[in-house]
Length: 549
Image (tube, rainbow, N blue to C red; front, side, top):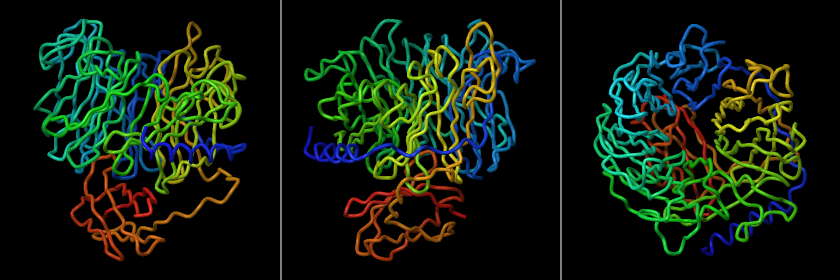
């Protein structure tokens, strides 16, 4: 552990010890359930260039809202919302005997849409161009969801997608898992019951350019969030239980491991590192997102960690974040939770630089305010912080009358979107027999076994009452919107500001420095919304959004 990490941990611990009861979170403004009497849940959601939202659902129902369709025909469910969250259009991209699961969505500059996921057929022959039990796929549609082209990738075994990012040459970088070799997958490390991590690069038409296999003899899985940390250099985060091949490290002999890999657009590995995933930051469900020149990871920590301690009364797992720099060193680590199980799974930030971390919790103390199941089962949990990760508020929500909690033994799914003073949660809820069930006011109840609906919950951020005044940001950007030049005013007038402009999907579009009153030219950017991150010499960090017209 380097000196920087020790300093950051000491700072985080001192802040945590000063926190008392945290403010309660925002009110639920409205909610909507989608699905039938099977398991249906959201898989992804993005902000579109018109300030609307595009979301994907994995439906396993053929009734309720999906009446008249088979489960295969109902699959690949995509909904386009207008800025005021009315449905503009919705489509299903599955067809008879071909189940398509849309896991990732990306909007191109011209408004066309890229859908990525996995496809499979019950008969083994019902899907076009599928080699095995499941393959990865890319589909391009126009802005209304009309198909333009479609490509599949895989082996004669099971191949599943985990993430998609665009590349500067107009192509795409995909990550996923494979259980075999053949077809597009050149080799496989373990047996047919193990998974390798696969990385695939395509051109702008979805034609495969290269494939990289990373793994060992056990289970290797790229986690959510492939990050472009420098132009054309991507960081991928692989969870594993392997101890050989790419995961062999004589200094890391724990059962669970991380492999962090930095790979360029040509498939060349520039840097990699194996780390333990057993003691401090577990490799369960995690999300990795851009953080200036590094990466912010949210997931599950350990209250009794020796390196990253929390308050003594905290126990079990904690919601945790860590920051990795460009050398793959941990420079910051912080945990939140209570006296029971607490987990972060996904996160987002708003235009003010505040962060929102979403997961589940059984706690009802310390950083978690309540639990509808009296600590016996898990409720959903959101914790908000400012840009320096000081706690702003904490919110538990969900049901309280299912004997299996909000997840009911299933895998957590969820995406957060913050925009226009609202926080939208795209997840799932176990449909209760009697409505309302605490915060759940909709659903299709299945009397034989608990099933979930895709659940969209809208929180009104203007209803949060903070206990203390939030510090003013050191940055102001103007004009916003802009047509050609963006100016940044910093409270430290003489500071040199480093900036990075990214698309809403996280791709790096421009980097540089700004001195004094120099403007940042954005005239070559297409019209749309963008993120800009800024950092001064004094290490003040901020992220905001702007609109190019």
